[in-house]
Image (cartoon, rainbow, N blue to C red):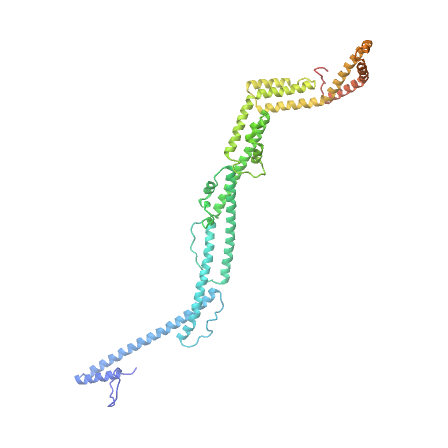
Length: 463
């Protein structure tokens, strides 16, 4: 920096009024006029020189700081640009100059457009990541059964298309799982509704017991009912309803079976059976058939159960009548087959039990049916022998008639219808001639029957 010492100027030299030299010249003139001491003049000039140096120094420092800031801004821009390339997974950017030249400001201005473009790309990429990750988090929250959605944080260090595709693939997997779960929920809802209709239950209440949101329509709220907890509760409800349905079906089948047996036992008329007609019973109790609405309601079961109870009471009151009827059936079988009454003692004891009321009705009827079956079976085994005995007895009648005819043949010959007597006599002779063979066959069959059954063959209580 130049010195501020006062120098003499050539006469007539013109100085700018704003220059330092002009101001110093004017200051000298003032000092000369007032008579300023030389030492004071030098002190003041020295102060002015120091103040000028400080002003220049501040300007230099300011300029140097601006240069440093430009270097720093340029370095930061280049570093940010490089980081953006790495973050977005790109190797280069066509808009970036390959070589930096010119002043610092020119270099910074040349990289700024490319940097701004990369920043916009990053902003758009971050938005894509945010949308995909937010959707993933939302579906994950629905599956986990969480009410709120957690805050999504995007990793700025990896915004590559490869990473974005990974998140998009994960999102597709989550969407498929959500779709599968929604289908499963709808299947459970349909099953619960069908079970409810068949058993007379309110499907809305059944679904509300699982979760109130299951009553919502097919909207966004409904899609949140896909958590493991809800699926587990739905499955449990379906299993419980299925078990209840099977229990009711089995109970109703048993009741209908008992009802049918009571109808048969009591000889119930078709008119009395009409309220429980066969078509309705088959539709209700069909194992493989589709059950209609209200088929297994508690009211239906109680209705059949009440009828079974009523008929059981009626059966108890008619048990004596039924017993006597079945006993008469055994008597008729024995009479027709000319055999003695079996199980006479047992049936007398049964009659005593009926009179005392100490008897199981079903066991009683079963026992009587067994007696009837055994009586019919023995009657069948005796039929051939009985037929031959009756044929033999008829032959004996013909033999006696022939003897009487022979003793008084003259009377028969002159009586009215003598030719009829002659024909009968001829037939009687033929039959009588067969008696020995018939007796022989009868004895052989009787002996075989006795040996087979290890008992004596009686005909009207006679051997």
